[in-house]
Image (cartoon, rainbow, N blue to C red; front, top):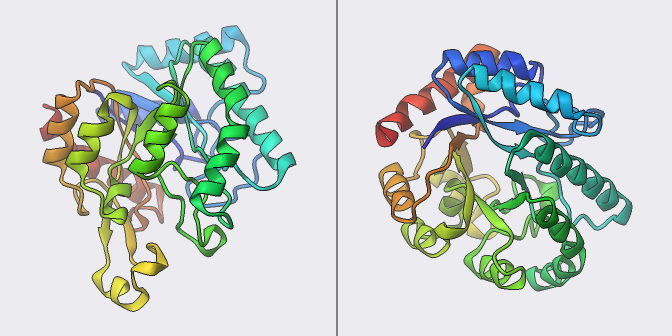
Length: 304
């Protein structure tokens, strides 16, 4: 396993600058954030474009890979996390157009995985959203498969703010839906696994990895803690609003010894990518980097 970072928090740095810092900080993999270059940032931790996937040439793609390789850094995946099941059809068209550009870029760079969300209309129930997914996703899934690229959905409910209320913006979060995804598309769609989302849902991590680990195509390392007072104030029916607190790995409720031991049992040997969403480490670039380094030091003992 290689330990690395998702580049999204470094929105004001070039990819080369991020890679230099990652190398100097003993990270060996990057998941590269690939939002549209003209993207208007609509939420925290989204909007960073470290590659112009819409205009990249074969030569430029090779140059990026070679540059990172010279720094002893591999690319774990290209990442873009919008809402592909958005209720507005024109917005969905833009999303899938950009996702296609990412898949094409991944092929040019010989990067095997593209990470995204399945999506969801927050105003519809889970079964209504699933019926939409069955209609909206097949053509794009076929395209990624034909290009030899692995598509991976993250298991995040995407319900952190009231504009995502009440159903969230990503339905691929529960064992029930993941069984449907695997059956519907014959295992072609993989999972970008993030253990923090199991804490929110009170889903047993060991059992989840045992059941779905063979479908993990990418793994995030993010932690989360439950604010007990917040839970008391808001209640569990608020679906995490006011009591789910993202943390750097080692500072929350994820059992990292179980995480790594279970990943080994299912023969996962890919990169572990630290995802930074901890508000205590984001006010300055120095704090941002401190958070990543803290996470590195908390996770490395399990990898070694």
